[in-house]
Amino acid sequence: MNRRLEGMSEEFIQKLKHYPWKGNIRELKNVMERAVILANEEKLTPEHLPAEFWTAAPSLEAAESDTSLSTVERKHIMKILEQTGGNKTEAARRLHIGLTTLYRKVQEYGLS
Image 1 (spheres, helix red, strand yellow):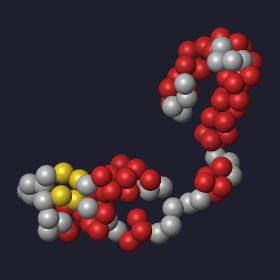
Image 2: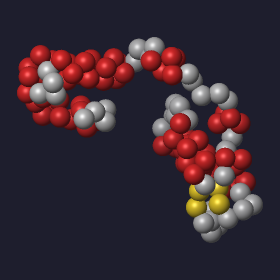
Image 3: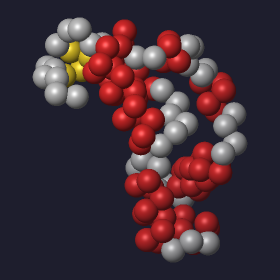
Image 4: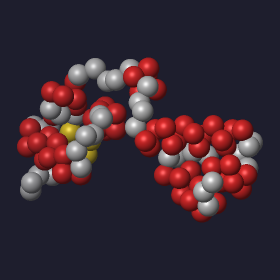
């Protein structure tokens, strides 16, 4: 955009992190381009974000009731890891998946 900005405010970054992105990387790119165009200051702030960023975030209860396959899989893996005391070999056996697959899933879902 041929603009020199200092960066983004912490609030701006938090709004981006907590937004339920439904599109792909192009959606993020469009939001960032729009914010840069609207910015009169040297730093991007939440005021530069579209209106949909200002609607109420989904409640924790709504997030917990999410039944997407990835959410269900994540919760199931967490439950099995808890039952096995974190023993990944045993957890993989109970899940009927390979150990490398379990390690990949643990990393993918940010489990420890």
